[in-house]
Length: 566
Image 1 (cartoon, rainbow, N blue to C red):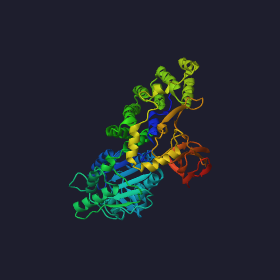
Image 2: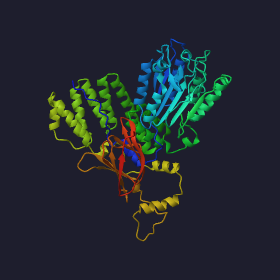
Image 3: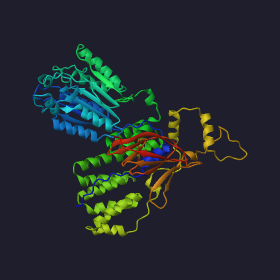
Image 4: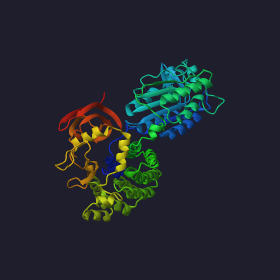
């Protein structure tokens, strides 16, 4: 049986991308996925606890409701804590938010914080104690290299015999070298201890925190200000939570559903753009949630119809991936094939179907899907499908026969974009944009007429009130030379706007320009509209260099050397 690795490349011409380009480029600051590691330790041989696991479960529920993908560990040994921390780091990218919650015993050793695993055995020296506990600074080091924002919450300041037996100071120390864009919260002040709340199911701190996380419209600072008030009152001022932050942007567990958000006509467009980014990362849960919000908002026009068409596709992709993870390869292949019918440009779904058919020894079905890719795919995907057919042809003659057939012409664009009227403006999108960005229309109408002078009767005089040719709002789908690929461009006078070029040279790695992948190998020329951009070097999901701001000037080439950070 042939086993092919899961192929993860994207079609350049997705239906959603075409519509979003037509709708405009309005988007909020990119917000990546949310990932949380939650640990609750009760079962210590020395001074066991009774509420830490309950605390972890309560936080797991609250954070999942806030859009976090959670990793929950209960009664974690030292190896389990290390493995869970590595799993958290591996799932993070440069735009993501990481959250770490720990409930259990913690100790400071020589002004450094350590978390105590349940397999801790009494140590006779300070050095032994260090190597038997989980070093919190180790987690800080990984998070600050990989993620946009880190939130560390420690309900780990309970009275601790681990500290007492080694003549160590109780409580936790003020963190050192936590990194930028980090928020840290202790259930009580540094050097102080907190009770396990033996009369309750959860600690006072976590009980208040989980309740306040669920309340919409509270910033991270708001949440912990109120937590501090509740805990201080519940403990008669014996325990006062403590926080330190160097975040530069506001964070909400649940964004405010206030009048401004409810009446923001561009919000649905922002959700759809973010859903597309989540889809590109295979974050199906968040993509589904965001597209559902668009459907419920009922924005009308092409945006609403696109969201309704996208939702079944996302649900099918999530189901197919789950079937694959469960080892049900034939079922997964059938669902992947179905997703290609839901989105004709989802060529990666077709390859996933091929892989799963091969894993279940369904060679005829795999060859059929490779033939479909040859019909619908881009130039690159057709070449890859042909290579796979050649390899399969050595053991399955029907695969070699498919290659001998003449490559068919791709179907008409109108057939693929079923239900779409080409050349028809999306008036609802224009209305949403105008409502979300009120401007002095007379001044902008003059600027628009200067940039895109419409054809007028020679006898007439162009004024700010002249009718602007709405062709400038259209897009056009074209073949690119002799390949099977498509490109999208604006239609109208001066539609092809000038560009400049960044010639990126230097170390190996992928290039990220303003958060978007631009090149996989260096040197690489990147054409961009005039403006300011931030260029970063990324390797294995981590930013390893660059970060400088560069300016693109029309018709000019600027060389940008990238080096790895030391």
